[in-house]
Length: 302
Ligand SMILES: [Zn+2]
Ligand SMILES: [Zn+2]
Image (tube, rainbow, N blue to C red):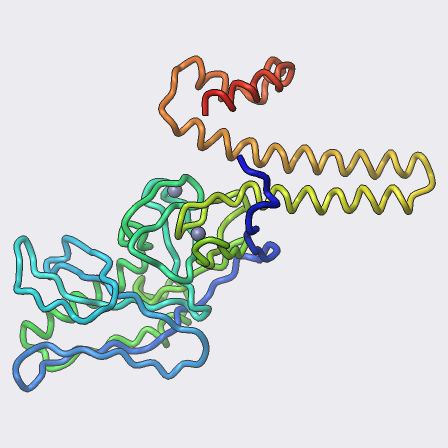
């Protein structure tokens, strides 16, 4: 690993509460145009951040694919099912909720979803559409059904998601979703993605860069500052002992958080059973007695 001070650090904000964030609202309308084609519009009169993402959905509902906006797809119908463009909306902070297809409970939000995402928790890389939340899928399904309704003869169909998203969860259709703020908001120094996640030792969902070194260095700097302040301000020996004991616990806990995360990712790599067992045992006494040989082993293996 290179030294943390040679890298641009991740900018991050302190932990936030888990708050529901309404979607940015608006109304989707589909109608039959005079030349017998299906037309659509999206209208929003809300203030504040709002963003849209375009997906292609198969008319039979079997597939959903991320389509970066660059004009409506004009290719002729293809097997197995023709795909049509639909839009999903951001929340009122301009963020899109995402759910990892591997962790399943791995929820996070991003500002600029691109063709691929990395899961900030388990590191799996997948297509954008694989990270759609259940509620975003429900909105896509509702929009697909609206297009089918028009194709089957309805004059127009309007879907207003503004009013319904404010309703209580039990009265709200799944497609009128809200998102949820997570603990830590982070900005990646490399790809500039802005995301919020649970915890701090994660990967950037945009480029996969780990926050570990940067976050650990920040924690250590803060603790070092507290050591220095205690050193200069506390004259009483017992008070200093007490304060240092507290700070040492914080150091160990920051280190353990980092070690657990690195262990998790190393265990995900294919390796010899003996090596896996050693890695899995890192909290045992035997491991603690041989921290330095273990460190040398890690450097030579990985
Ligand atoms: Zn994951
Ligand atoms: Zn990044």
